Amino acid sequence: MKIGVFDSGYGGLTVLKEIVKILPQYDYVYLGDNARTPYGNRSFETVYKYTLEAVKYLFSVDCKLVILACNTASAKALRSIQQNDLPKIAPDKRVLGVIRPSVEVINKYSKSGLIGVLATSGTVASKSYVLEINKISPHYKVYQQACPMWVPLVENNEHDSDGADFFVKKCIDKLLSQDSEIDTVVLACTHYPLLLTKIKKYLPKHIKIISQGKIVAPSLKDYLFRHSEIENRLSKNGVCQFLTTDIPVLFDKKAKIFMGKTKINSAKQVFFD
Ligand code: DGL
Image 1 (cartoon, rainbow, N blue to C red):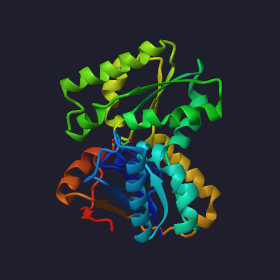
Image 2: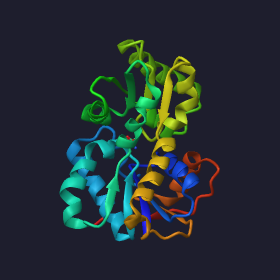
Image 3: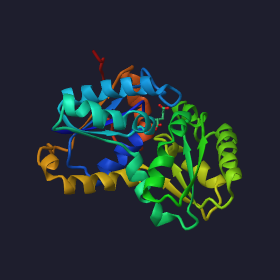
Image 4: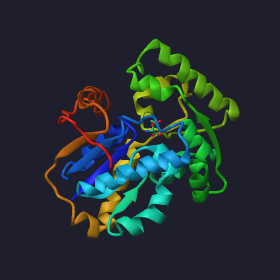
């Protein structure tokens, strides 16, 4: 059986890339809901419906474990799927998100206890990061900033352009204007690692940046180590398969940007029932 990695579009490939780097032996199925992206400004009900459809699809193609690489899906759908749907549809399978592992590392980084979260409007509205960070320590103060233009910049391959500077600076200024003592910033969206160079340009040097791929990958490794009943069932041929709900040719082209130099096997288009 395989590991499924789901995202609303291409962004989750930044997470898959890091997972494959440290866990190359497993077989992966990446599913991008490119036909319906972005999720960032959609309602809870819609994100939940779309995410559940994707999870069911990944189960149907032999995934034992599905990672919701998408923050918006993790924020708006993960809990309902874990608590209400999984027991009914696939009690022996697992769905994991990216929020918990991303916040678990915060205490290693923050001294001031003042945390910034940069995310989509949907993730910000869900307050999932605030809740999860406060579960770890109620003393942390969390400041959120929605960055609605950042995903479109990346999706349109404009993340290295001069125009991107304006929107990156604007959101970072807004975040820091909430509290200038923020010392740790979570990049709570799959797309933001592609803007890292510009984010670093506008964030003061002493601020630590938590970029998810590098956190989620070791957390998955640890999870599999602790859950041998799942790990034992995983096939180990080192194959990545790519599925998209939109045009495969476009996916192949864009996926290279998100995965870096890694060779991409041609994507296949899928439709949900
Ligand atoms: N993948 C989404 C996330 O991490 C960003 C793109 C979208 O809005 O769908 O929140």
